[in-house]
Image (cartoon, rainbow, N blue to C red; front, side, top):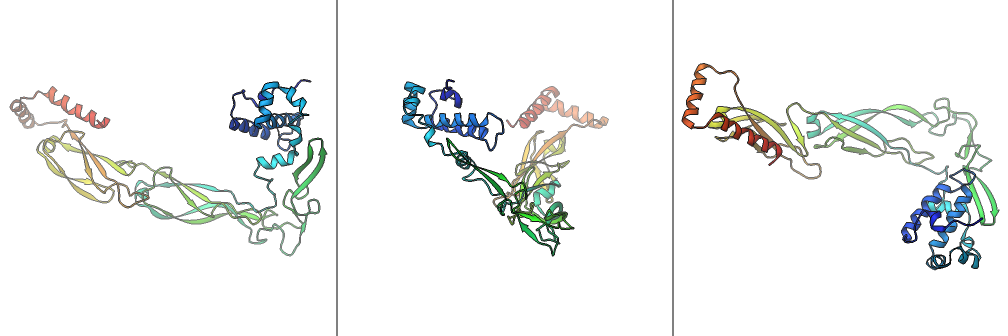
Amino acid sequence: MSKRDYYDVLGLDRSSSEDEIKKAYRKLARKYHPDVNKADDAEDKFKEVKEAYDVLSDAEKRTMYDQYGHAATDQQGGFGAQDFGGFGDIFDMFFGGGRRNPNAPQQGSDLQYTLPLEFKEAIFGLEKEIEIPKDLECDLCHGSGAQPGTEVDTCQTCRGSGQQEQVANTPFGRVVNRRTCSSCGGKGTLIKVKCSECRGIGTVRKRRKIHLSIPAGVDEGAQLRVPGEGEPGVNGGPPGDLYVVMRVKQDDFFERDGNHIYCEIPISFAQAALGDEIEVPTVDERVKLKIPAGTQTGTLFRIRGKGVPYLRRSGRGDQLVRVAVVTPTKLTEKQKELLREFGEISGLKASEEESSIFGKMKRAFRGD
């Protein structure tokens, strides 16, 4: 049976770089490694991928192959085969220099908690206590899983390692297959009498109170990491962490954009035309704002330092106030008469004035 082209085996073309060859090999080796892929043809495909990589990853061998094809391989007695040291070595290379001992200490899983905040709570921060369900070490057996007063035996099948090994000599080298121990499930120990509280698990599900310090200025989607408040570790490993995700409610009056706060204040035509000093609500207090004569609807005024505190430096953003000139809908005869007189004196047609006002408002909303 003729061999497939090595470039086809790795899914590459002849101009592929060394990095592309390595990436393709790592991907396919993971896919077909016998310890991962249990298909009947996985071992043959893995050997084919390894052989192709041994040739194409070596500059001299690749040059020979590009010139003479598989004939070069036959002349040199198969120049990829002698370097093959067994599946165990390849598995170690891809999975961190050795497979993890299931009996070794492992860090616990992280937890996530969604925390709803009011608009002003996110701005000013607060101290808050939450309660979360999590696994905690069993108080009765202290995490061993065994009933107090009973013994925990070392597994005789794996001798406490948590792994079983099968060694085989093949034409490609010595192959060592490691499996999780079928007797102890990888724990390395056997419990004779399980703890009556946790039933041999070593942990119990409880609700735990945790105090949080929410910094001023957090925004929607911000995360607060609480070290060590995740799930407990395994085999004496450290616990995971808790990540608190903020969900900030919207306000009916204020609108936040980063560290700035926006609001809209209605003013009368007389205030806009003649000018005035008005009171404006901020997240802290009410402040005075001077409206110059001739102010148009949509004009933005800035109140410095009344926005949202910066998280990583001192100071705060600003509050921007957009004024909207309110047109009265009900006028007395006296008011109508005065407005007509004003129109005649100013010589400005209503349609022209309307066009000017609405044009400015549209540009302000567009940010022009």
